[in-house]
Length: 530
Image (cartoon, rainbow, N blue to C red):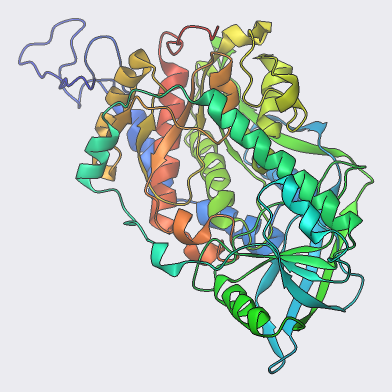
């Protein structure tokens, strides 16, 4: 529920009342104060002296894609550490965690040899091997929905290039509006009673992963030359994630590529008419086994009288590899960095320590943020079945074990939904926090940030905090072209970033960090998960 209250102006000064914005910069209803003078300085620095676009340009154009474990990801972690220290943040350092082998690619060519030679658009899946030079093989469409389907293909796959998907149905493609409408935000502000489906989700996840691993081993054992899959997006957008494995010793399978949907559909039509149709594939990819760790970047603005209490903001620095990881999530990382740069530039002296975190391993089930939370705040055990597929506490449901720092974290704020402006925040079913957020957002309504949703949102780095009872929150953002076009795709580049939106998001993030760091009490918490 959103509470409404206006700053009351009085004719006669009365001790304890806010009399005028000219007299007292901190002016809000009783119980929650907003320092409007500080907000004015935050807005001035963020809108007139912004560095957010230069930060995100360097991460994308100069460093490029930042797949966890790759040389580029390690370069990005070190560059962000140096940049935060350069801006005057204290204790800028990297916190390593166990990851596995790194991987990168430097080229991929897929050529249809007849009816006429033509190069086609394809990107290798991460953590799958290269071809060690050009190789040729006949296309073969296979349909495997369970391990029982293996039997019909035994002895038939050697030297073949396997088509694993059915044709992409373009009639189902739909592009949603780029911006939230007032009606959509109002609907988002209405709480939805959740359905208890966690057990079904876990079972479905395990079935999918087990089948994927079984297929990888089967294709390797049968000596398939390569596999091709259709992109989930049309119009030449190649959306690609992981294949193979980043864990040393696990089966990686044959080279695996994702093909533009339009090109893939043509493959299916031609292969149906000509069973011997051949393609040539040349994938240049390599593994890195020298360092099995990845790192999170951490830096702080030290607090004053409540310095042992902490307010955090974060975003994931890692990305997939088809584009340059601009909207997912150099944008969020640059906003978090810009927010603390703004606060340092205006000389704030926060009561609580403000800590920034830039995670890696987010795309591999949030393992970077889970590692950090487990090291500093607490953890939950998970079932042996889930632990087989994901490290740390992913989807854990056991009892919470807390560490002393658990009591000292006031809040964590996350940004990871592209480069759209912030329209509000998910309060994660925390009604007390929702009321506070409504007050903090009120001076930001003119920037389009005015919605508080009590709904839960997942799949990003506030989840490890929320899973052990810490106040962890994700902002609501305009989608822009995120899910339909840029998310995990070759179109995720600097050109699809919105400068004004990133400036707005930086100001809102800085305001939230300041408000949380300066309030008298720590942020309210939900009951500790049982």
